[in-house]
Amino acid sequence: MNLQQRDELSITAVALAANTDFGRCRLASRVPPALWPIEGDAAISRILKNVKNLSVRKTVICCNGNKRIFENKLNRTNAMELYFLDENMPFGTAGCIREAIKISCDKLILAVPSQIVDLPDLSKSLKRHLESGAILTILSGNKNSKTNVHIYIANREITEHIPANGYFDIKENLIPALVRKNKKVVYETLPAKLYSFRNHNQYLEAMNKSLSNKNVGDEDVLIAENTNIAHNAKIFGPAVIMEGSSIEENAIIIGPTTIGKNVNIGKNSIIEQSAIWDGTTIRKNCKISNCVVEYDTKIPPYSNYANKAVTKDLSNQIKLDYISESGIAVGKIAAVILLAALFVWSYFPQITDLAKIWLGNDDYSAGILVPLLAGMTIWFKKDFLAGTHKNILPGFVLLIVSQAIRFFGLYFMYSSLERLSIVVCLWAVIIILLGWKTFYRYLPAFLFLILMLPPPNIIHNSIMLPLQRIATSGAAYSLELFGYAVSREGNILYINSTAIEVSQACNGLRMITAFVIIDVFLALNIKQNLFQKSMLLISSLPIAVACNIARLTLTGVAFTVSWGQKWASMIHEVSGYAMVPIAIAFVLIEMKFLNNLIANNKK
Image (cartoon, rainbow, N blue to C red):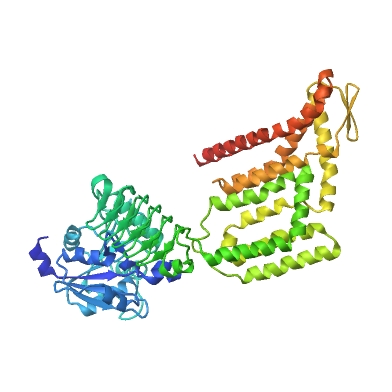
């Protein structure tokens, strides 16, 4: 089809703007996806340039209720007539074609989604449509497109099969109507891929694929003029950096990434596989990963965003008054210090009592590690400063609950309830400082704190004797496997006329608490599925019991030899410490086995 034939044919384009995703995507609710930038231009502007090459002189833009926004953003040119169709109620794809035909007298209608990255050359498809005699041609991307987006070429007479008013969709309504009338509909697969998007996740995926498939410059990095990039900043392509942008010292850009116009990336910040729109300022020590950042957004220092659309209102939620160098709010520091002082002052007797238990009772000495491990778990996943949403009312409610638990324990002299109120009150303080959503995000780590508390005496006494019996029976059975003549009376073992008492201290509770704490810490931090984590937690008890039985067996063997009796006490203590790396080795072997099991099932 040459240029003269296309001029004689006359084509009207219909640009279909996606809806606002009904609030599911924060960014789409603020900026229509058709206006999201692709390498410096709005997606719909690139579409208009492409259809202009097909000699399209008139384009009807279906604005989905955003007529004023599109009129302000799109430049009118003499070479292209733009008509903005503001749909107060949805028309559907076929309904938009119907409304466009009311405006235009052209013979062909080319309906194109506005939110696609690159529109391929459609001149051959237009020619094939005319030659086929079809009333409608449906164009889709090749099999690698992974999007369910279509381009439509329709003859003007198609309006005879579309109701005069109301909603009418091409796929659901028009195509069945054409088939019933024996009208020819052609489906064609384009050789090129179509990358479309309706939310920020699809947008990033489309942008990344488009950049990855292009040679955007030397070493896959295209840097426009008038940019200021520090000599020690690192850029790993594919990446596009538009004019007027600056990247400060030690910043790292990891592609596929697009940096818009007049963007400032602060020192030591990391931008990974993201799209940063024009006018954005990202301060120092930030990490932005798999994000879309809206126009003119100001992101404060030390922010951490991952897998989200970052809008101006979202960044304002965490904007704080920063100290000049530390980047931490003075008000927040004062609040933390004040609440921490009040907390320690209020719970000083209970904290002292808890510390005495940790230092004086071997069964629960591992509890002293729990606050440290819980803090490490939160630190490993530290993005709570970014997007913190303050809903502190649940914090005050939980504070009242914690005090009710505390006074109940004081009145009825249940010291275990007083210790429990320490953790509950700490949860309340965290919610007041950081908000309910942050607390919920790290709920497993905060629940982990319960393991630092010794159980009530009634629970302690109920598990002591069963554990002692299991340890005695297991040791007796193990010694018999090694050929020793063993008889048992209660918790006393007789080995070759040597009596060995399995005391309460040898029941294995100390080992169980330590291994459970270690396994819970691992489960919170390893990147495994729920099944693997559950198996890890379930297996902690039998592994701890087995290690304790091995320890008692080794001690029993020592008592049977003359030289060993002198060292039996030392062997008993040393073997207890030796069981820790052995138990961890068992856990690692178990994780390896589960990984292989799942990998084989996938195959």
